[in-house]
Length: 372
Ligand SMILES: [Zn+2]
Image (cartoon, rainbow, N blue to C red; front, side, top):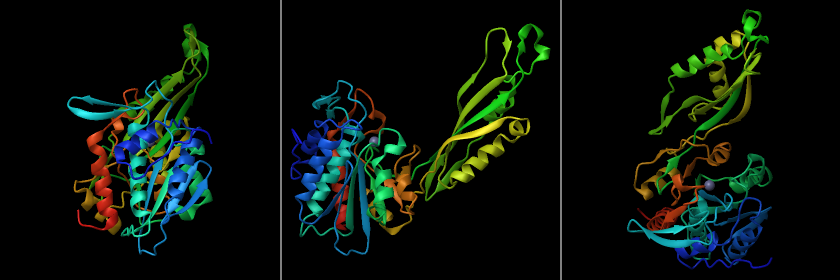
């Protein structure tokens, strides 16, 4: 443990965000930062703390009737020459630039501030609180620290509401859509293109499926007042042997983004139905990956109180996020963080300074049970 960054939870949320950003933690190298987070949390007398790999878990045990889980990942995508952090004013707005500012160390800083406030004797949160700081979110799902916690310490994730502090520009984004990827393959018979009637063209065999996709009308589904917009799209196509050969193989990759009222099986069944004609004609369909979405659960009392504290109408989360891991346990989950999702993973990544305090204040009001 060399150069352990010191995290002062009494510093304001901007200073804390900077301290986190200036401790680089590209996926797979979160250990020093996880150590620092663990040390800061262990110093708080009101928290039970546990370490799982490079994920750090902390919770209050006050016997409150309800529990709120706050979660954030500690890792970032690879640094793009954008560290250390830099405070700059652009278009009259103070912004903190640097890798991980928006996605999602600003959110982690808010979580740490809340831990510092409520994780001490006399902190008196209205709900028991669980804090989950996890590793390896920006890489393959098998490495995901929250997934590991779900497998090895499932009880730590239980609660009445989970709030994931991924960047949402300070808006509540409920649930998330699912995502399914399939490969539709056709086969034919190879022949010289000068005698094409001797062959069967596998690329032409995809024509029907492409026409189906072009004509497809995706649903818009309203759940708990949020509108989820589905999409079924070809995202890749391959086939062809040489400029003078009738191709005997072709494949279409299709991505289905589906509303959370369908589960994984229903989503796959729907796609098979859409391509029924192609499948009847001999095409094969293989599921490459399928991750179910998450219902927003905004009708649950704990979630409704949070919406009231933020004071603005929630919107639907269209991308897939780790909220689905909570939804798998039946826990309503929302995304809410100070960062700007459009800036995540960019060289120009930054967070508006004027978004930090409002996020901290809204969560503080909600967690202390005071009216918004
Ligand atoms: Zn993120």
